Length: 169
Image (tube, rainbow, N blue to C red; front, side):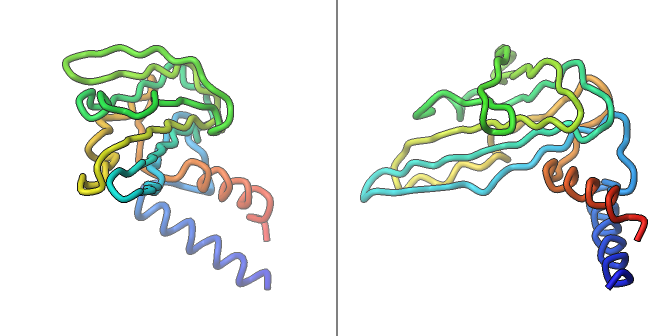
């Protein structure tokens, strides 16, 4: 049993390192990961409500002094509800929003290690309209230090915790 658990951690860690450059054995000082959730779409005969969420997490060991998330302004102009920015998807987070050359910049401010912020967007449109995607909305995630990479912040934090607890096996 212990041998199979060790191999499972080794394989999962190798896949994460190979595919995303993310290590579960060691947490870097500055690391921001972001992941787009699957769209949720509900339609009545003629109109659809589409909800998208984006999770941005500080998976490094040091606090980030300022994290900026940039979105294209044009697709967000017709939102059914204002964009919600929440800590862990539960508690509303105060953010500064600026517009620069057709891009909305959401300044998250200080983001502590192992903390995550969720952006929730709700669109209303005809059923014939294509599903909005984060690729069409998201321009960049820009931390103050280090780089941002695509990856699941919650999953990486969980795997690092599991490695810390059971990595010695």
